[in-house]
Image (cartoon, rainbow, N blue to C red):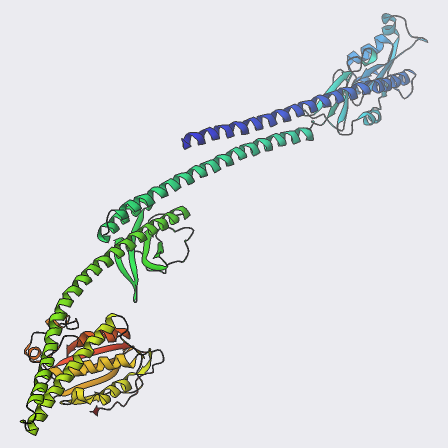
Length: 618
């Protein structure tokens, strides 16, 4: 339909241009014809006006010659040498009157007789002829006076041109000849000519107006057709863009699983825009995490804030997919052909649909994770009840039993027995206190307020040293080797550092034999400050290292069986470390036991750790 409309417009435009040019040509031809007619009329009038003066001049010259003024006599040989032909000489003899001759610039030939009067008959004239006399014709002044300002004039006799001013008449000029009439000027003629007439300015103006009007009309029709075609193309592109976005919406609604949605969406975008490649990523703390790549991998350039006007073939278009002010994805497409502004906007609209799919998939994953966590919490609750019941029953039973003995048999007990029972009550009470404190820590962390004090910049070495100085009972049966240089500053709370250090050192004391050494070290590693606790115990098997920081998890070794605990200490360490942006890990220590490392990001004001570290035993 568009092609037929364009063909009809081309025919109309061609017809208008042809008609305008034909009309202009007709106007020019008509103007030129009118000019030619006017020139011919003027030439004829000028030639007619020149006849009388020239005839009068010729008659005057003939009368003067007849009177003998300015004539010279010629013999027969002289007449021939003067260029007078026999016919002219014969006519002058037989007529007995002056005769014009067109030789040279014109002559008047007069016959003379030997009688006193003109012989009456031709025979008498022939018999009494004495000779011929000639007088020149001085025609240049009269012809110059009658010559048109922009043309010329010539006088011709029966056989030849007598005089022409300013020269021979051009063949292209408008010329007109007039016979001088009967009598002595028979067969003589005067010719006038004018330069070729020019086309009138008015005709040129009308022709130009016709051509310009036709061109303007054709241009207006062409522009209207171009605008109409552009409008039709915009409608078609808008429909195609709507169809692409609708197809993307259909693809996005088919599933909440990105593994199914993304390949279908990539195929749809590739078919619609001829893409070479496509990638979808998610922002992360370390840059961008690639979720999906199709075809060639697009470039990793920065994502533009606004949409570009166009994208050339081979260039990458990066779009930030945001929902609720939060960037949920980074879409990059590698153009296989030129993408104009409509294509770019359509890709952006398709990206918004894809953003909705990502948000839906993320919400679905969160719901699924929530269900999983709820199930896990339910399982943990069961484990917690069992563990807490067991762990609480043992110290409570011991406290109740020994305190009962003290109360009932106080008088029968020796001082040594009383001290022993009181110490057992104290040990179990402290164990019960540590268990309650662990449960309280865990409860606070679950509510998101594990640190009661505000975040400040701490000297990590001083904080660790203070914890070990204030809690000697944690390591009363062990030696402590402390290496804690000053100057390593972290941002966090002193309470969080205290809970991390006391739990790690207490854990090392629990699983290593009495009298062994616990090594505590504070150091800088890359851009982090680390707290390292090494013991000389049995270590942590590799199979249990990934689960050891889980709540209520306890290993299965002999050392674990011989000790008591609820499995919360290391989980609390991990939570408190995370509250300060830190990470905790476990490995084998050079001493053969376990090495626990807590890594904290350095505070912005932190300077490099000073040299000359010293070991301090506590």
